[in-house]
Length: 225
Image 1 (cartoon, rainbow, N blue to C red):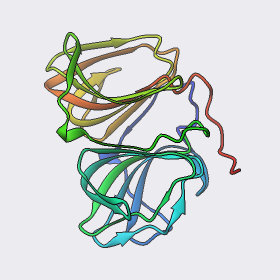
Image 2: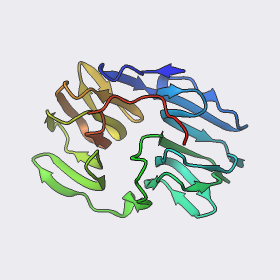
Image 3: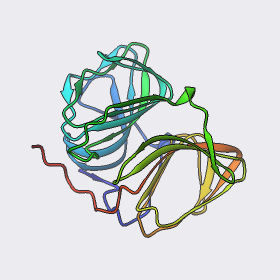
Image 4: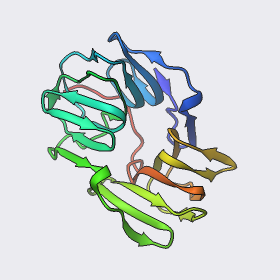
């Protein structure tokens, strides 16, 4: 399966207008943002767990990264409320579920296979630090391959970035305009390395999950082992 699989092109999904697709597990549905592969896939998705639903135990052969957008995500390691950012690197495993229901933004098979950094950050408990005019930041992860953060954009802020090595953003709150399109909550944008970012935050500003630097090497279908 291929969804937004040409990483040399701009990709957009306004997910609130996109239907939910059932996963193999009852009560767990997905909105696919990009994907290369079948059930074992390099994938970026928004995943919804109905109250009382669960997913079978599994290992993260290629790593898993997620941000809780709504409700409380759970596994044997604990409860992860709204705003929790988690990196489960290759070799980790868990049995996810949600007693009350939850929605997460999740990325699979997008790790350095040697990465062993497991990270849990309560972003709601972090105070964004001003990094430039109109922009504050909560850093989440940074290595030689990528930089992940939440940025808070002031109302009307002009956001420009070039030489980013690939740019990906999910709107958590508020809105911004880019390429003549309005991106509101749960809208997703991906730009290839050669495409400069030029955006303007909406009247209420924006809180945006961002990853950059990760597309300097074209992604391929994952290979287990």
